[in-house]
Image 1 (spheres, rainbow, N blue to C red):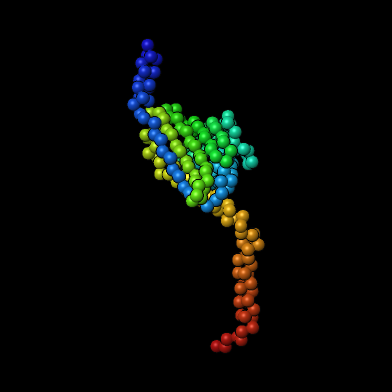
Image 2 (cartoon, rainbow, N blue to C red):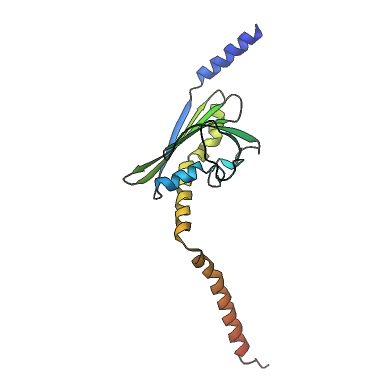
Length: 193
């Protein structure tokens, strides 16, 4: 009898709390391929404002049914499970986040080419009686995900365009300046008191 009332009260609370749905977008100068490579690289989430790290091996391509663990940047370093629901190559990645009882979170990344550049979208859907509380914590960070993803893909392109030799030239130039100062100092006349 108590079980009936417990199920009924939980169902009533979940029906009372409407799902929270929000989509954030950013336009990037990076190509669809560059952005897609960042989205599916689950081993490197250094750009992500909500996820600190995952247990995905480098090079693993996400496929529907894959379950992996991630550690949030916001809460205690407790691993959360992420389930890959849908993958459309170069277009869409949809995952379900299994963090706490009382909340269901779905996240969708979309990448599409437009006349202004490549659009990346980050959609969040939260359901459950804890969703208003969780949303109050993650909302400012979720708002930055699309922008940070676009920025990370653009930085990858800048690194690829910049040869390694020019990046190392600056420390060698400093060493040459130091050597020149030593040479000038060694040939300068001694100061007499």
